[in-house]
Length: 419
Image (cartoon, rainbow, N blue to C red; front, side):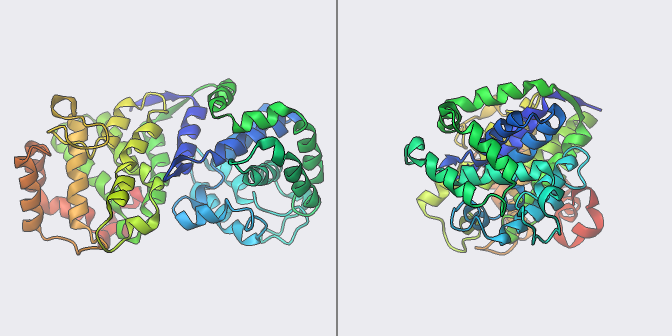
């Protein structure tokens, strides 16, 4: 079995980057929240093990809202921050992570990160019963939300401090508010938050967490979490990532890939649409033709998939297989215009798998297409030098088997590994 020596901070940073995606690029909400958490942790002399949990949980704290564009927008608005309904995405994040052997230790901290210090929470917890890590994330999250990036940070400092003071003993732990006051007296605290070039320095300070060895199976389990998030974006693509994965794995085996490479294909397939977290649900579910601007927004998803996955140590090949699925042999695909011999067999397989699944899925603008129509479309793409003819031949030589793999009616019974 293949193993990857990965710095955990690079893995969590990459996953966090996916949560930061927006139409206009990166929001950095999670990153800034993690930076504030680290400052508070240093101030209260939190030990290194707890700090690691704190920072990593902060980097993923809104994972439960990732599938819903509206929910993501809502939880970053100051006028809704005080509402206890925000706890719904915290619970969703907990449910996503709780059974993960690799990330499960972050689940409880995320679950309670909107619990009020004064009690009255669905959890039944109050005061010091709420995990310390959750309490710190709650406070840091609020500070970050209160920052308006179109204003001078120092013109906002007093208002932010006044806001958390008003909530001290009600929403937030008073001792943590006191610690926050102390660290916020330094101009550097605020300048670091708004300095876009500082983030890499911040992540470098986390190198002390060292590296860890992840097996291919570990990576597959983590990728499955994000595949769930991606596929939940739209009811029309509820099984898309896993269907593409199963098809790509099937084709990789037919093409003679080694067991290790088949597992790498599985990871790539599960994560190939990771960048779609930058695309609003309304666009993905639009029943009519997309506007030119909407097409550009959708097309950016493969770029972000690549930029996220390249952050992870030794994921170079996986990143290419995952992100090049809209590149074409004639070099006219997107986003990198890579073609010909520079387009590896792994990327060609994933491209064929993605097109096949897309054509056989019901979409908001059409029903699932029959075999002959799928074959006509994809054969024409071979003639236009868009996709690999040999890979397509393998697919249609085993078409009935491939269709069974992506039949969503069988998903519950036959696809437990991908659930």
